[in-house]
Length: 238
Ligand code: ADP
Ligand code: MG
Image (cartoon, rainbow, N blue to C red; front, side):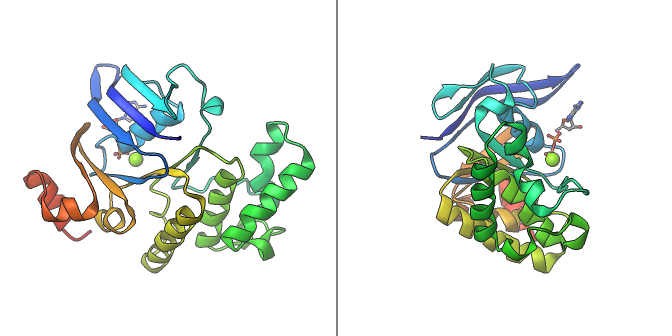
């Protein structure tokens, strides 16, 4: 059970409180989307779940274990960022296997994990290429592959498609959802794009200024927005 639960989370940077008491429960296998305007605290929440930042107060549980004091490696989460951050001098194969290699995984096991992820992502033919020989969409697939080979309990996506052009973005949305259908790994996907949220989410968490405005399925939010902010934000084209 890889549920993710945030209870009473606040986060301050110096004097400024940017997360102002957040309670969110994500179910095992759910694809949850955190959506809200730039600066509302989406990345900060993800970074705290990943263990890259510590909450000022509150408790984070992954698979019913309190992880507040666990370092990122022990949380079994994989994060996919907006900037692909691939190693330019390494091939696709090396980029995908690098994390496992430094974790001490045996070469044979790495090869088989990389092959499995490459097959699922349609990267088989590209394994010996360098990042500069790939398109933007292919690079983002490699970034996902790198996250997948670690068999995480939870995927965290931080605006992974915002550097791609509109057409590719739509295609990648479908691909990420199809991948989730197969893997069923609990996923938290952050975006400021309401269309992305509405088309991808099992459930949407609408955030504003460090607080949760509403949590619901796309249909629930569309049919019964809890307040004017949600109605305007969800209803307006991106
Ligand atoms: P989002 O991802 O929704 O755009 P962020 O989580 O990046 O928002 O940021 C939320 C708020 O916290 C912003 O006002 C941002 O300036 C502030 N913030 C984020 N990280 C830091 C930091 N390391 N130090 C100070 N302020 C930060
Ligand atoms: Mg962000």
